[in-house]
Image (cartoon, rainbow, N blue to C red; front, side):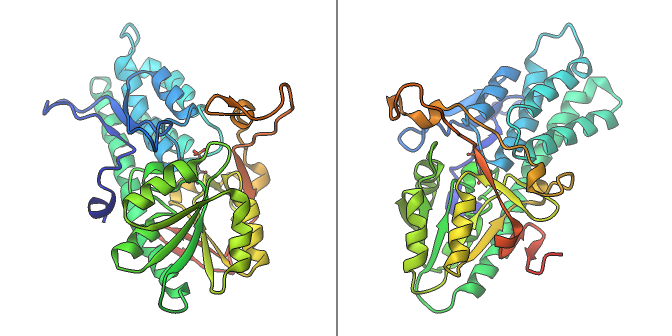
Length: 354
Ligand code: MRU
């Protein structure tokens, strides 16, 4: 499915190393800050490269930053000067990458898995190879998880579709191929249904302030041939109120607490409230690497606050008066009570959730 629909979107991978028998050591990402007007790939070789790419959202989306973090750890350890061994540099390099962004649990999940791999691998001479193999496995598992979410989610959405004709869907931010190593999480069921010939009418919130919906989701959905409409975030409630047939709201997640509360892109929570107010389903899609058993509820989840300039300025243009205070959380928490289904790589979780 990935090959048929979205093969050119490889948001994060190893850079091909020209047929050499050495394992690859450089990470290649699509620079998502430049989309949709420019398609630019970028190589990450050092710790600074990796941390900067994650912080500035050149690579973004919870699963993609987990994969980029794991691969980036290998790149950073290969690139640094070699007066200290890989093992001596491992902990500090891992800590820097792990701390690049705080909310998506996939990043610490992937880095901790890399550290466990290193701890289990006694031979220092082959440590980098072992880490490269582990990072590749994290990538491959994410691809497989996306495909599984696609088929479980398509079965669910197919069952929620009440009659022939297009299924209307609203999504927020970007939880597609750009946000993962595969075909996405929230967008995976849409690609799967589209491949099966089910007509879709997808509304995408622009997703202020960084416009991941308008710039990224609309780009990848429309290039796959899916009918897509971009709207200001505030228009979603109107679409939900006016709908004459059931609408499915479908989003990804950055971290899911033990009680089912979901941290996702700012604006997810009001969308869930509007879906509940107008009687529509609100579906969350995520791989099991996004489940965080250490957070009891959403209040335990650290929410990243980003620079106010993202709100007061747009593409260098000033929007707000000089010196105004800004509140710019990158994520919000949707209480589990507003969520109708969770779609994971292991299947669909239906209510009651206890
Ligand atoms: O700040 P971003 O663009 O990394 O935020 C991304 C989201 O909130 C996504 O919905 C989430 O990571 C799921 S991606 C499959």
